[in-house]
Length: 114
Image 1: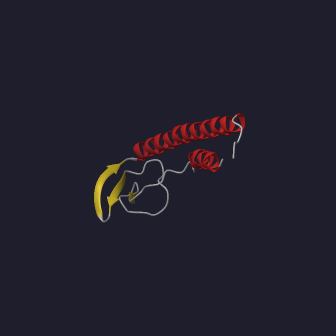
Image 2: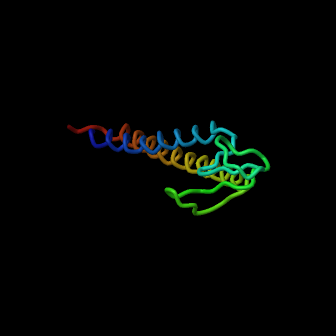
Image 3: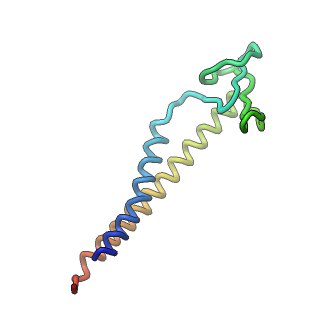
């Protein structure tokens, strides 16, 4: 019986991970955040979220710029990442709860001989 409980717990872990990922994606801020240096319309670096019209977001790897994005590109990327998190969270949640329910149901229908 102990191995069945362990199996149910192992299925519940991805379900909890998926639920957390799903909640995080659905409650994410709509602000466009630059993961590096944000350059405004005036050509000066400025802190905080990007604003429409910001010319450049330098994506940094340590202190080296590896890419640049406009406001629209960064907004699209963040939106895509949120939808990926929603999709992955749903898949993990369905996998985990489905596996846990099937294991729990199979454990209930088999009489314990010990």
